Amino acid sequence: MDASMAGAALAVLAGVAMGLSAAPIKFMTKFRYEHWAFINSFLSLIVLPWCLAVALCPDLSVALRHPPISTYLKANLWSLAWGVANILCGLCFVRIGVSLTTGLLTGIGLPVGILLPMVFKGSGQFATAPSLFSSTGLTLQALTLVLVFSVALMARAGSEREQKRVETRGSFKVGLLMAIAAGFLQVGLSFAFVYSQGPLMAALTQRGASESGAICAVWAVTLPGGALINVLFPLSLMLHRRTLATLSTPKDFCLTLLMPLLFVCSLLGMANGMRMMGALGASLGFGLQQGLQILTAQGVGILTGEWKGVLRQTQVLMISAVVLMLIAISAMAFMQAR
Image (cartoon, rainbow, N blue to C red; front, side, top):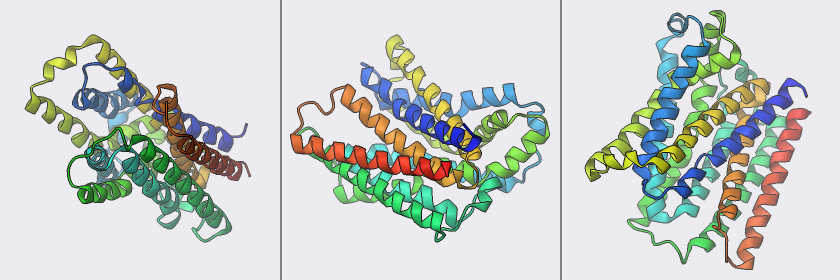
């Protein structure tokens, strides 16, 4: 297997890890959103990336002095955008429902995350990405449309499944606008790496860091923007509701520890995969990771009984969506191999 296909495989595994990262929530009995979100965000966005960076990068503090301050600002603004999208996503769930929220987020995020790096080139090797209107760009546009259509089918199936189970609260129009905004902002996590890794990777590898170690350090200095809101918001909820003591629930606490491990594995897999895939890595890597994340999350839902008892036509919609998504993902992998 050559390096580019190994990169595609890493992007696929990153999607699986991210798709599994929320599964522990289904088995928690006392933790609410604010409890697992606080622990997960604190460990995955601050503690683990910095521990890995310090352990794997020699002369870390010296290396990080070389890139311009604008690199750090740009990376953390993208990261902050992703953090805001996370909060908006949770607020949208209670206003317009989980399926419509997920459909809008993914339906907007996929084309933006896949196609924008071919219009506004990223840093490092991503700067040589093909044009959006080249033969490669046009093919990727067509595959992106297939992905978006499959997500729309999934959202429709999910909406039919939930219509008798979920009672929405608050303004539907406000929820719709927030979901659309979150769809554009959620690509910030990918863009934080795509548009800042070039100068950071160069500075770190020049001081003796391996490429994998340097990627850990890139995430360490990129994620504080996202951590700012993703740590403080659930903490404020716990203080307001006076539920800090719930954090001491042993079973739920241990289950929560699985979430940052899977999240960080996904980040490292996605970043390594993107770089190994070359100029198209920012687009193809994001598409592969997102596609497998969606499929894995749906698989977890099926295994935990979310789709039990739904109508046959709803099952057909979901199966059609999965088949279409698998076709698009396979075609993207073929593009990388070619």
